[in-house]
Amino acid sequence: MSARDYARSMPDNPGVYLMKDINDEVIYVGKAKNLKRRVTSYFLPNRDIKTACLVEKIDHIDYIITGNEYEALILENNLIKKYTPHYNILLKDGKSYPVIKITNEDFPRIYKTRRIIKDGSQYFGPYAKPGELNAYLDLVEKSFPLRLCSGSLKDKKKACLYYHIGRCSAPCINKISKQEYAKYIKSCIDFLSGDDSSLIKQTEKEMYEASKRLDFETAAKKRDVLEALKGIQANQAVQDYNDEESRDYVAIEMRSYLTTVSIMQFRAGSLIGKALYRSESLGDEDETLFSFIVQYYEDGDSLPREIYVSHEVDKDLLERYFSENFKHKVKVLTPMDGKHYRILRLASENASRDVEKRLKDQDNTPALEVLQKELNLTRIPRHIEGFDIAQLSGKYTVASLIVFRDGNPSKREYRHFSIKSLDGKIDDFESMREAVSRRYTRLLAENAELPDLLMIDGGKGQVNAVYEILEALDIADKIAVIGLAKEHEELVPPKDGKTIRLEHSNEGLRVLIAVRDECHRFATSFNQRMRSKEASFSLLESIDGMGKKRSEKVMKRFGSIEAILSLSAEELKKEAGIPLSVAEKILHKLNF
Image 1 (tube, rainbow, N blue to C red):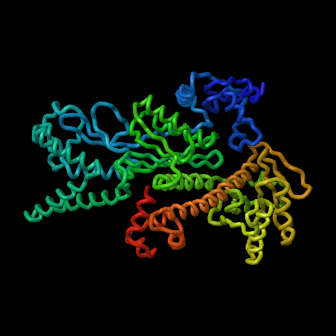
Image 2 (cartoon, helix red, strand yellow):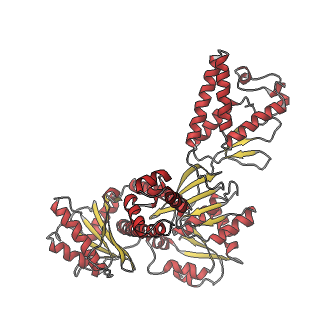
Image 3 (cartoon, one colour):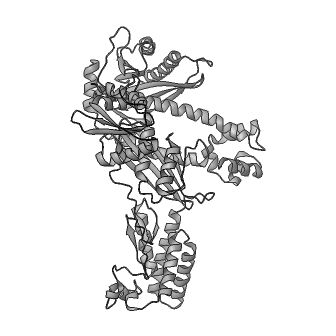
């Protein structure tokens, strides 16, 4: 019985499926509203490379029926923890952001921990930057004479060294009352809550008083504390003054099986930290992000009120999961514009840079040698270029050119071409001809290096259209050309060359698929930016006091919404030549 037969035999019920290899090891766990429909989708002919690689490793598939999709979610999470399947996303290091703990004692201690215990203690954080947390604790120790010892104070017979050097108030030998000690704790809580202005004023006052007493040693210590306080205050400058709610921004980027998730956390209006989580997965981006979120918040601690996600996960199911498991109401959202969209895009950019760095660090020389052999090339294709076309109903037609060096992306060499020859028609062949002609006419004019291999996203028609251009430029014998037909990931040579079909696990094929996927991503993102620019123009026009001419002037001057938002109302008024009241309306509208 083949893996496909196992899929076809599944029921139309919600549940969890367990994909297993020939050794009966669980390699992937997933959930589904409809088991049969979901699992058979893995075997469709137009599946992507990750899915195809996963399917090749499946020997048989087991399943467990549940009462509904919510029960399937709970079971899936438990089975992932039980089996740690190789091709699911796994948080190997856990969430493990450190926090600052103020213990629930008569004379509380303050220290760093990664464990949150519901024992009445207070916790501050989490802190994604250990250096920042250590700076906080160092300041607390310098500023407040709090006890550093653990255990019961009743067992203490004499004060420790910290008391004698002025770092502890020695509650163990009754040198301070509960009420006085509580004042220190309150100041600490204010400081850790972000209200450090009163502490700065108090430290300044103590510094000046020490100077007046000619106690220069104490004054110098207070000066050092004051400088550290102001430094931390400066590091907290990334703030959102319009929203005091807690929010997390979670973005995923995948290149082949490499996965990076970026998280940016806002608490009380401040960006308290950002972190990157690296993993490997053969799931699609939506289900991988969903699984990550469930694992990341599985203890229910530090849940925000809102989670903004980069992909269309099942938001209702996640919200129900948080509500029923942790009695915590969380909104899961995918913003399309505004300030939350811009922060989420920054998180996506962080994830993208990281996963591309990981991809670049890989040694792909063996894969290029395989590709040379499979395509019968005269040399290893160390310089590969790829083209793709993106358009929306004939508008914003663009071609992307991406460059791979030694099997990895060379982003500084990427280019895009706004197609000029179509006059609103939809013609991918002609678009490809124009882009290829413009690219290689320029390289020849500059006597620049030509690629070893040109990869075209498409079948025989697109490949031959490109080959005709190379013949016209008299370089068809200098650049090898291959097409990648998506339905079966077949390699299509020009003219009468025979189509080549390789196993999806073939390393050479995987390089070409990476080129194709990067082409598509780059073309689509540029296409979206063009649409976004037009949408931004429409948004400006809708603001009272902004007509068509004034909107055109502003967009021409600044180019993007982000550039406008970087200005104050006064700067916008001056540089755009518009009334201050209109500038204020623009900034107010764009921020919401």
